[in-house]
Length: 215
Image 1 (cartoon, rainbow, N blue to C red):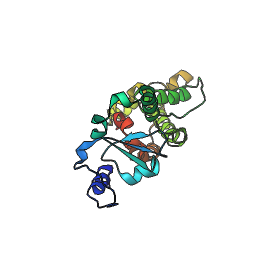
Image 2: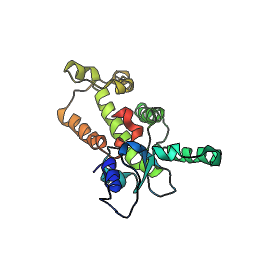
Image 3: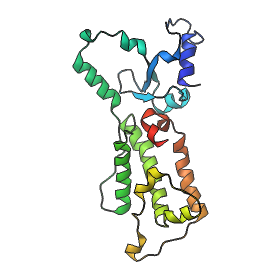
Image 4: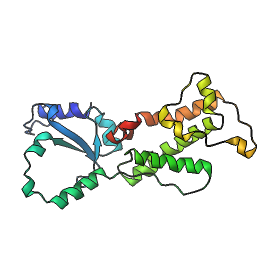
């Protein structure tokens, strides 16, 4: 069931009939946010996201922000500073932390963290960032490094094309600079890297609005 479906069941009194929600259409939803607690920072989600996955991975509190909430609010009665602080808490995202190093592979890893930050991505809590986020960054780093040590151009020659969004992270391994020859691709090893990244594509955090640019 999607977040949108759940909302409509509430409106139609199919769930919790005692609730009196005077809304006739899901089009009146301005946005949806989820949080771990009522007063905790919230993360925006898409209407069509699966409600079970998100409540397990992001938080059990679902906040439906309706368009009517915004149009009927009286600006004069609102504290501007409080609104700014509230919005700041809602928009705050966290990134995985790694030790700084001059090692090329570790530099790549930290550059990937910066890349996510610069594109508006991140996780709803530091705990999620250091578990889900760290797992994703490590798997992506290992996959890119494995391909780069063997040259991504060899994959292109075989009609396997790297998405343009990742190309800036290649041509860094440069094994020749250490007087090593480039290794050959091994189908089993390459498949292991794919399997490591595959769960991330359908994870609840990947379905959040702040990762739209990556999907």
